[in-house]
Amino acid sequence: MSLQFILTVTLNGLTLAALYFIVASGFSLIFGLMRTVNMAHGALYMVGAYIGFAVFDPIYGSAWSSYAWPIAIVAGIVAVAVLGVVMQVVFLGWMQGQELRQALVTIGLSIIFADQLLANFGGSPFQFFAPDLLFGPVQVPGIGRYPVFRLFQVGLAIAVGVGLWLLLNKTRLGIMVRAGVDDRQMLAACGVNVPLVAATVFALGAALAGLGGVIGATAQPMALGVDARFLLISLVVVIVGGMGSIGGTALGAILIGLAEQWGQVFFPTYSVILTFVIMAAVLAIRPQGLMGRKVA
Amino acid sequence: MSGYLEIRDLQVRFGRATILQGIDLNVLGAPLSVVGRNGMGKTTMCSALMGMVPASGSAKLDGKEVLGLGTGRVARSGIALVPQGRRMFPSLSVHEHLVLVAQKGDPAWTIDRVYETFPRLAERRRNGGDQLSGGEQQMLAISRALLMNPKLVIMDEPSEGLAPVIVDHLIEVLRNITTEGMGLLLIEQNLRVATSVSEQVAIMVTGKIAATVNSVELAADRDMQNRYLGVSHGH
Ligand SMILES: Nc1ncnc2c1ncn2[C@@H]1O[C@H](COP(=O)(O)OP(=O)(O)OP(=O)(O)O)[C@@H](O)[C@H]1O
Ligand SMILES: [Mg+2]
Image (cartoon, rainbow over all chains, first blue to last red; front, side, top):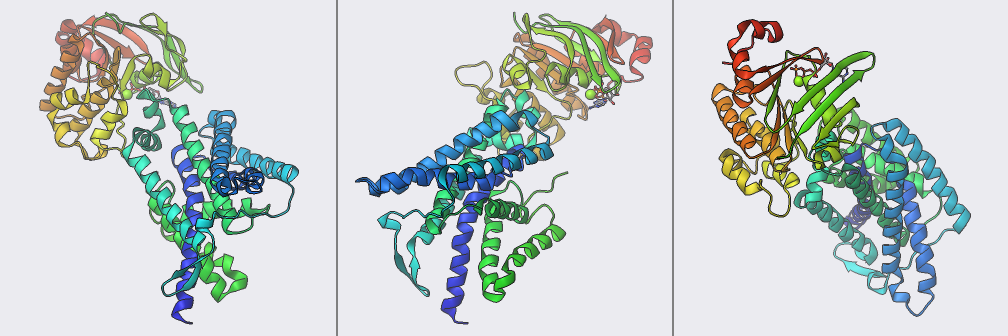
């Protein structure tokens, strides 16, 4: 096994981890404040990609083709954020605290979303073309030619992580969110409009799924069925890293990304199992996740 | 004058148990203390007024019904709660607790004024809300309520677990608050605090107001204290 090979597999793991982090941090954010296990998070990822592509496709064929990708990103984010707010306000808000009911409702919604995508956009796979700036290979020391978009993915994940950290730690909204995680009722008694904060957080968490969808479908072709995969990844990442902690989500994403890539090297057929072995080990040793706080 | 609270026939049930069986109380321009033994329903009354538990009856703040509004709207309509057990936010620093509730404009209570009034909080502004001593936590819980610049503050056993010197400081703080025209509904088991802060003391027995008496009388009447409160003379 050459050093170049080791570095390449590791970098592949990290770039995959970057995508997982973007998606799972949205899932973790929603769970952290609202204790809502949003089983539609994978479907939101897919909706982001499909809506983004519906906007991307006609623009890409026009004279404005260089703007197609950024516009698709914005469209994916906004559409899924709006969908998230509707989910929270219409369905989930009034069953606050009933986790099982919320989980079942979001499973139902995710099935509806996936079927609607199939009905409206058909089942054929598609892929975004990254803008010229992010297209093609670059020279990476020790590795050689490597797709520049996958490096961009890492940069974006770091930006998302830093942005979330700043939002949670340096803004009044962030103070409200953290206080709400501690004691929602007391937060309301402080005069805060908790449903509004909840809708905002849901929009933000969903938006990250939408962003992930467009990014993911730029790196690899998108097809129906990825919703289940990304829901599962989000669940595993936050279980391993610890619910509601940005650092934990990053750690979980890195572990799972690396495990998937190295798993494929050593036992290609059973590589998925490695992911679950990690999850089971973490659950056995630290049930709250590697960086999660113990909850009563 | 504002911060008038009129409670009529306030009832709370938990399943089959009726915890509050029709409370009638008025806080009309002067602080009112409510005393009573453990488990009599004092905290339940506070929770009901804040919309934290379902209740029937009526509670009007300056003539406007607040029962059934939902906790956030009750708070925004002008009632602040200093809850039993303080309920700090462990994830927030002292300063963040204050930023959370501080209001824009030029209100009576600002973060600066809180730090002037409670220098200990200024010293510990970067500490976590749960890293404070009991007395500091109580000051923070009170500050959190004052910064909302409410018409009325409800305090649920603020002296609980505090050393006697700190209780003296607390009494002084409560007296100052009420001279500024903010209404105060004070729940206490410490008779010394209750009788030094308000002229009227309501006595709660199993979910009802058994009597409303004058502070001076209650402080002097050992029989009444024993009958309604068991032995709880403060210090
Ligand atoms: N969520 C609940 N479900 C059922 N019963 C409850 C609930 N909360 C309180 N109670 C009961 O209601 C009664 C009144 O409780 P409450 O906390 O209001 O008393 P309290 O006067 O505040 O007592 P303390 O002085 O100890 O704080 C108690 O008998 C308690 O067991
Ligand atoms: Mg109580």
